[in-house]
Amino acid sequence: MSTPEAATWLITAAPATPVVPAQLRGSGHLVAARPVFAPAPEGWPSALPLPAAEASVSALHALSQLQPELASFRKTAPDAFAIPSAPGPVCPPATNPAMRELVLVVDTGLSMSAWYPTVNAFAACACELPIFNDVHIVKLRSQPSSTHSDLLERSTVINLGLGNPTPPHRQKTVFVITDAVGTAWKRGLIWDDLRAWAQHHTVAILHVLPHHDWYLSGIHARPHQLRAPVPGCPNSALEVSPPEMVPSDVPNAGAEREGRKLLIPVLEIRKRWLDQWVRLMTSRLLVHQQALEIPSVSAAAASVPSPSAAPDAVAVPEQSIAEFRTAASENAFSLAVLLAAAPLNRHIMQLLAAELLPAASPGDLAAVLTSGLLITVDNSAEHSDPHDQVVFDFAPGVRQKLLSLGESTRTRRVAALLDQYLGRDVPAIHGITQRVKSPATASPPEITAETLPYLRVECAVLTALSGASAPHREAAELLRTRIRRFETGQ
Image (cartoon, rainbow, N blue to C red; front, side):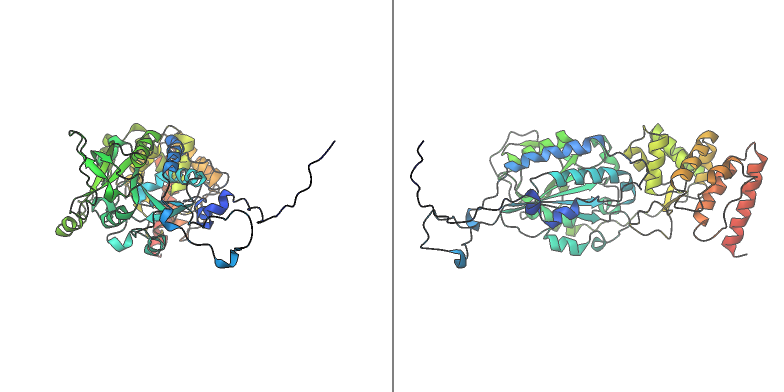
């Protein structure tokens, strides 16, 4: 057996260290991988997201076809690492790595509470996609805001460079996730931000409501035939052809600079909708899209947003409930009746829906939240999302009327669930099952500022169960008297 003659080997460089995806993504991606909103407390049943939310994210894989142009962004390797006399191949000059960032602008309005699990699922799946180096979260305060400056965390927007030009090797995609029923949408307060982002980035609105319900929101999308002259171009460069016209070769780039409207595609959170949007971004074909028309700067300046409508005369509970029952689905109304037996926050609402009305959808809960039957309590923080504090309440008289429409067995079941899941964290709830079952043998806890919201609900439940029960009637009257004395300082 012979071996080849040994030859002199020259090692010109150490082997490159493999780069794992986590290194490419950076710390910002890992931060976004955490839930956007608090999940259900430990041991509680988890609310399910929209079934299509997770599948829809897979459509974004096709964005990997967009390869940023890096030819003009090469930089010379530092001289310290140059070895002119060393044999071997010369390494090519280093380049700026291609970056693709995803920014999720998430609406945190009142009714969006019902969609938080869907937002969490979408964000988590987006973080798993290898095509995004970073996934950032920006929260939009659409419900309570009345001015443009209140809408967003401006420092975060500035740090992310939203609305500023970006180099070709650093692409930025902005998805706005919303139900569009808040003040920011109905008064057009968000238009300036959308206009600025669409000038330099790819922007789309992900509407949590199905298309046939968009008329209920502040987004009035219209069908358009759009084309991206350059794959992955910002919205301001999109070419437009009316659906009834044949495709035209005349570009419509720079529409905003010419005083025309900017178009923001509006999509359901479903795979076929995102597939169509990705087709628009990755081809030069005309693609059908529902789009929101953002007026030009000059047109927007000429029109002053109308102030919020003055509140109508306060409707009696019976009228409010009758109007909601007529407009809402059967599941939404049944859910409202169940919620009347409980202190309310987002987690409790989703608990009762999951356990007692599994057929109810996030849209049914959103319908309750936007029905006008609910109000926010005075001491709740604007973005508070606790499971052991009262965040919502029914308008005066509504809770008692809804309870009178419910079944006593279902009301008792609500009390049992509250005791099981919430009683360990809220002393005022602990033991409520027994107090509702046999009020003569168990008395409610002492009334304090912390227990008062819960005991008001318990009093309403006892009153609803007192029709044919003297013990319930007596317990309700006694508790009502104690609450009145506490509130008046007697």
